[in-house]
Length: 215
Image 1 (cartoon, rainbow, N blue to C red):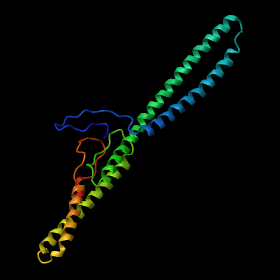
Image 2: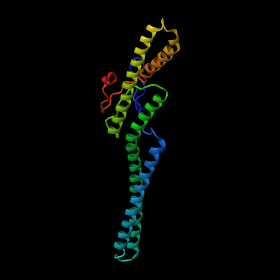
Image 3: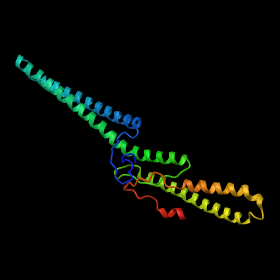
Image 4: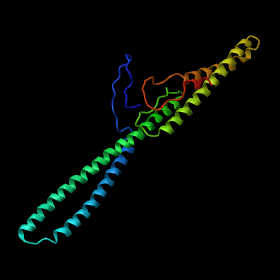
């Protein structure tokens, strides 16, 4: 996964955190949560200001009292602005953390699909302990594992057919083009089953059983 750098040949790796795996998606929802927090803070501030104004209206309106009210208004406004900014910032950061737990699995599945689009199968890994979409991700892993098992069965059938046809090639030389085509198809499937991205990353969700490829 993108949070762990590829392992060096000696096995040493350096963990790196990338919280913006999908910048557009994560920033969009982080800003939405920050804006929602700001709106809530403003609404609460307006209600608090109205209650403060009603309370101070009952006080005597001499010069000292008006100065005290003005000073309390400034303090209240500064406290309200600080709270609003803190709430907005906290919700924005929370939005990044939460969306990161969704973007991580999507990022990994996107990587797997890009590898499969190239005609290969990736080495299956699993999620971090705090990631979301665990059930969906497990289903995705099982689907890819089933595809690998099917490719392995097809490759075995093709290899067996090629072996038998080569034994008969001496008596039927016209089979040579078909034999080469089947052999190429078998090699292509075996190459697709080769391990890609051999980074050993321990995560919490169990990967599909490796024995499924032999079914």
